Image (tube, rainbow over the protein chains, first blue to last red):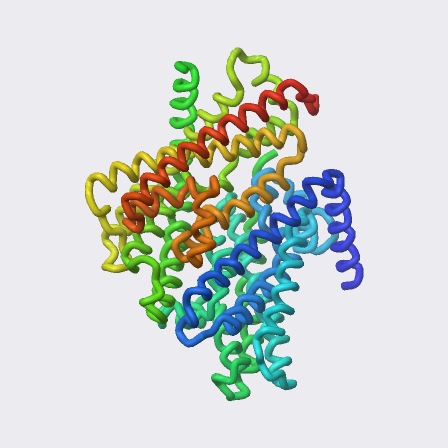
Length: 262
Length: 267
């Protein structure tokens, strides 16, 4: 395990050093990424200049929701976004090289690419997170802190699982499926509002099909004292189970991998 | 002029070949549009009086935005052009007896048009059959519709003229990724891609309307959805023309400088 982590960090450091060769571009990228997610915040901010609440949620409550979701996504992105360019690996056949090395497949794939853009987003997520927490006016109790921690764990696992599915599907389609972006970037984008505002059907979908609501809506209600049952504390952990079918699909894909390219 | 038109046709035909990519994009845009409308519906139900335009008009705005995304997204810059600048292939272009600015301009419009042509009709069709107020409604009258077409054309030109400035800058920085994301993130907000400009507080909105970014998607989409008065429309068109000319002049200047001191990279 330690060796694996060491290997992954080594991959990251190689990628960072190569990106630092273009310094101006690097800084513009970080600023740009920072602004992209800051724009989302500004959008919410200006909408709330006009409206006092949305379906019973005030600005500070939406802000809390948005900042937690963003941090969950960014944590997953920091580790698992390398799956994004997996389609290239399959198409060009360079996945063959990965297969013959005596190291974990996933670590090698993840290490193959590490865009520094993620640092900008992570930075923004952290700033947002602390801002959101401080503005939220939540009375923090040990239970609530635990809930928050579980939300971060569950959410990171959920988004990592989605990135993994994206990669696993490449085994069959040879091409990244743009549609998967709806489930990752789309969820980050629209997860800024508590999922309950989208109506009942959307809430059902996000509870049972892709369990975003488990790491966002339900525990949020607990944090905001709208629900008091202790079950809400542990609900986000259920989302970790989502990783199982994702990993299954990945294993299935690896077993059925036929080399292509040259 | 003839060679640029020929080049446009060639690129346009080429772009039409990517049909499965278009299908995937369409599905994504459709979900995106639907989610966007659900957000606005939630705000509308919270406080209908604070809504700057009707929910129908907002839905029309959003569907038009999704259908013609390829026209308006500043983000769709061309990797091939950036690559050409980066790996030195731009040298071939410099040898040709053409103006590189005009050729790339024609090429960008062609690519955007073919992308939009493939995607807009299915999205518009589905949106047209959605129940009120979630679907797209017809423009108020013929005059609005014609003005919409005109301003959309001006809007696309403005988007491309802006992208040309970014390509021009890429000659100086060589590594384009940073430029692209930086300019995209700055413009996204001001064009009204995050939330439509009417939803901003009035003083902020008035200021934003004078910027070149408001000349892109803001004008045609608002004219279509009928959320501009007559006098607002005419001054908006005037501003569009002004910014278009200004950006083209600046872009040409930039290219002239870049071509004079271009260092061809790679081998």
